[in-house]
Image 1 (cartoon, rainbow, N blue to C red):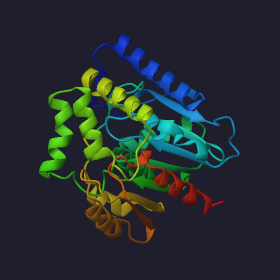
Image 2 (cartoon, rainbow, N blue to C red):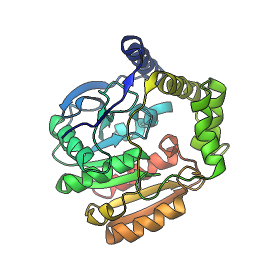
Image 3 (cartoon, rainbow, N blue to C red):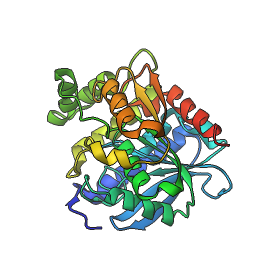
Length: 302
């Protein structure tokens, strides 16, 4: 595997310390600590957070985050607490994203993210597991499914970034670019309201929303993003043989769900097991009903 790009923290020592402090605050808010693991991969060190990692007899779920996010966003307001009662969880910090993994990244259109995923599975000594990914993480899951299909029980994709290009609608572009052009917490809050959430269907707590805003401010202002963006995988998807579930947001204006679902049916055919449409925006990984869907999916295999 040959990395072609490198993203990085602008002030590595202080920015990484800031992120570690953010993680510690999340642990304090949730009332439990994560197992912290570092895996050596072809992309450099890959940071993994876990719950129940010392219990290999449990069903295992491996989670991959969206673009410009950390997998820990899934656990705002203890979002993963119910899953952790039963399952072993690994939250993988994809290389090239604003987290503690090294910033090296491969060509996004190659299968090298899938090869990296195999290295993560090997490093964590995972024989077989469920995988779940939000947005860009959904693309990562499909790459892994192509490389190690025999080690994947099922792939669960939340508003995945691989079945269609992003929308070029005015509202989507405006609200996504707003915090990039002028990075302040007010503009980040607007982005969250218009793109990530769908208020008042469900509101995360004020404390969790502030914590997410703090993370995004750090990620946008202090991380130099050189990573290639997600894309519509098209014919690559025809080769996916892993059973796949889609959980999509009815109000997602970044990746409007109708086209994603239509393309998933075309490419995956019988391997598309189920589609669930929820009344939420793009950041559906923070929506409790989406997590309940994941739990129900895993239960069907027990």
